[in-house]
Amino acid sequence: MPRERVVHPAVLIAYVLLALAANSSAATAAHWTVVHQPASLVNGTPVLFRVTTPKPVHTLSGKWLGHEIAFSFDAGRKSWFALAGVSLETKPGSYAIDLQAETTAGPTIAFEKKIRVHHQRYPRRVVPLAVPGHFTAPSPEDLRQIEQDKETKVEVFKTVSPEREWTGSFAAPVDAEISDVFGSVRVFNGSAQRPHEGLDFRVPSGTSVAAVNSGRVILARPMFFEGNWVVIDHGQGLLTLYLHLSKFSVKEGDEVSKGQPIGLSGGTGRATGPHLHLAVRWQGVYVNPQVLLQLKLP
Ligand SMILES: [Zn+2]
Image 1 (cartoon, rainbow, N blue to C red):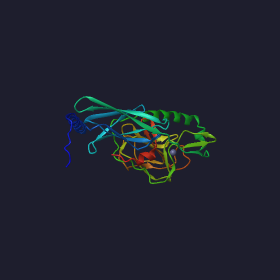
Image 2: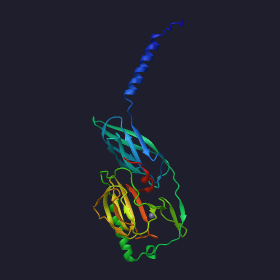
Image 3: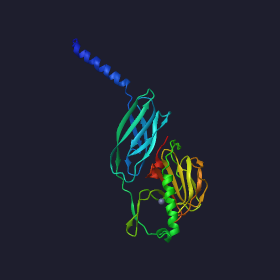
C-alpha cells in the first residue's frame, strides 16, 4: 500500500505560484526578434533584416553603423523588412542595431541587439595595365569632363527615396560567368588600386542587360570613366549601377521593372574590353552584388 504523502501547505502555495508565473509568461511570450540574412555578416555585404515586435506597431526605424534604416511591413509574414549594407572598410566587431517603433496603442518601444561583423579577405591580383593611354594621362578637356562627372555622381549618389521599389529577390542582369569579383584589389605597376567596387560579368558587346529589380532610372548618360552608364534607384537608399554599356534602352526618369532591358553591354569608358560592371550602393556604401543576388527577399 503506498503511503499517503503529506504535502506541506507552503509547498503547495509555491507550486501554485510557479504555475501562475509559467502561465503568465506564456501569455506574454511575444518579444522582439531580429534576424538577418546572410546569417554570417562580413565587411562589404548587403544584409536583409527581419524584425518582429512584441506589440503591433505602425512604424519601425533603425540605426546601425551610422545609417538610418527604413523598414517596411510585410503583412503576410507579419514581419518588418529592411535592406542595409556593411562597408568594405568596416572593422570586425559587434555593432548594435537600435530599433524604435511606434505602437498602434501610442507609446514608443525600443530594442537594441548586437550584430557581429566578421572579417572577409578579398582577393589581390597583379594585373597588367591595359587601358588606353588617355585614361591614365587625361587631356584638359578630359579633366573638365571628369570634374563634371564627379559633380553628377555626388548628386546621384545622394538619392534616398522614401519608398521601397524593389520586390522579391534580385535577378542577375545577364546570364554570364563572373570575370572579376567584388572587393578584389588589382595591383598595377606595383601599386594597389582601390578595391573593385562591383561585379564583372564576361559578356561580349551587344548583350542585353536587364534591371536587377524594379525602380526608377535616375541616370542614363555617357561618363568619362564609367562609359555609358545607367543608375537605377530602388528606394530607401539602394541603387544599382550598370557600366560600360554600348547602348541605352532607357532614359532618365523611366520606371523599370525587374528583368526589363535597360541597354546593351559594351566596353565604353575605362574598360580593358567588353564586359558588364554591376555595382550596388546602399546609402553611400558599395556592397557585394553577388551576395545581393543570392538573398531570398520578400
Ligand atoms: Zn568591374
